[in-house]
Image 1 (cartoon, rainbow, N blue to C red):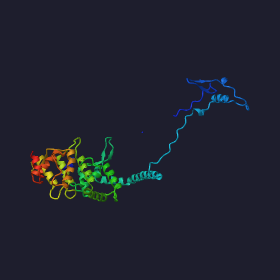
Image 2 (image 1 turned 45 degrees about the horizontal axis):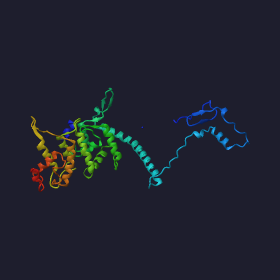
Image 3 (image 1 turned 90 degrees about the vertical axis):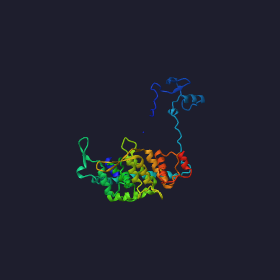
Image 4 (image 1 turned 90 degrees about the horizontal axis):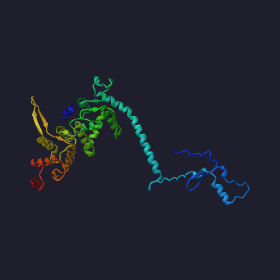
Length: 363
């Protein structure tokens, strides 16, 4: 089904010099400053003459000193280290910071040759006579994306099964925005980032990509956060903008790929939950139609919202822990479609209602 969908889709002021008309000092009272001429300045005593305290005071009062008009500088605050922090810790932190910047700069520079190889690999996915296109200015430029058919050929080159979780691992690495196309920028930048961040050596060639994808597959079951990342990606790239929901047929195909039995099974000890879930959806929301050639097509009468998509993953995790569905209650905030699924499972005998629940549901 996914194969089919791929094809369809941050002055100081200068000190003013005294006026030339004032060759002496300034005198300030309680109201204003007045400029005094030199003829009014008392005669200073000759050398050797004793100066009285009063005369000395008056002379000092009429002497202009620039320093008397300079604002005092604030005291410099001493730099204090945080309580409990040793003096050398700051230098160590600074050293790590600059070392990190240097390492990132070196790493970025070293990705140049890697990106050049990745660009050539992307070209290999396009027929030679289709590798250039004309831009709006009439210039020949390199093709910047591959279509659904070329995507399928890429998956085959990697040995990837597009009907399993492997599909979304690849689309996550190449930073895909839609299900049926892969852009050159996403392919080059995505794989360059994967190569730089991998704990094991990954070579920029087809064998290196296959090796990397195999290592990521091992994380699907052991790392719930990684599975959630792929699960959320599946919904995002399956939408057809500006729609906020996805077609239920596409959702079913994605669920079947994400919960594929050999990679990340939605199956408890005695119940095949994925099978029951898809059977319920087909029973309630699909219509089978045959075309003139006798081929049966399924028409879906409902879409799947982001909330329903997310809650289904949480519900699946709960059923793996408790296949009796005792965690479920009508008073909880599960989507109505999931509530109806629980009722459907009990009606079909897939699960048995806990004691007392039958009467509550009848009321």
